[in-house]
Length: 299
Ligand code: AMP
Ligand code: MG
Image (cartoon, rainbow, N blue to C red; front, side, top):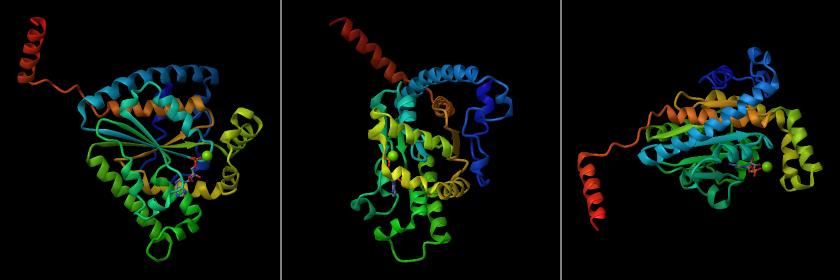
């Protein structure tokens, strides 16, 4: 019951403007939920996560058996938003043979020698697989839009980097996704939404806990100073690229148990909505099975 109340609100309605400041990052997504006690919501969330892990395992098997569809999970979020932890939790019950996680960093020279979507196309999941993009082609309209100087080293044809340029990128992304969807890819896009205060807490934790030192990057502090710019480019990105075929979900992520449960739930529900069934065995195949069984028994 709690679950239904939350999930309907997370999907970004195509074409609709988003004001991130007005969207909860905490555990109480709406007024009704605030009436519940936090502990009770957490308890239920953990149960839902467990149930979803089980259903994901069987959904994955169906995907694999059919070999007609693939799932592409796109994860975006500010530094420390919890992308890695979410992947770890959501994928934990899956068969590694049918999953693939790709983390995208600053593009290499080889990558910038190609069109911007090239490196992402190379790593798309095969039919039957679940692929996770830890950061994605959306970086090319996020970090690159916040720091357009990045484009100077990318061998692009000359021209203004104004609204027309960015609109063309959103168009390219929508066309790319439409192509994938038409070819049997289920695309699920998640933005892990944390507050600026929560990010401060998490960066401080990395600085103050010896075991977390390795996670700290000076670049995170530098990017934090562009917080407002990032929120703005995220908002534009949602308005331009949340589509019926590939919608964005904005996931409140200040509490890791909330984010992980919601992502797992949406992934498992959406895979189920593909309505996949185990492939039917033909009469001919049944005969072969029968005769193989006889052959082995009589060996
Ligand atoms: P992390 O995910 O913390 O390992 O950091 C990866 C870094 O690579 C982030 O700072 C991203 O902004 C950056 N990055 C990822 N994709 C791109 C891209 N297409 N262009 C520029 N920087 C990128
Ligand atoms: Mg980082």
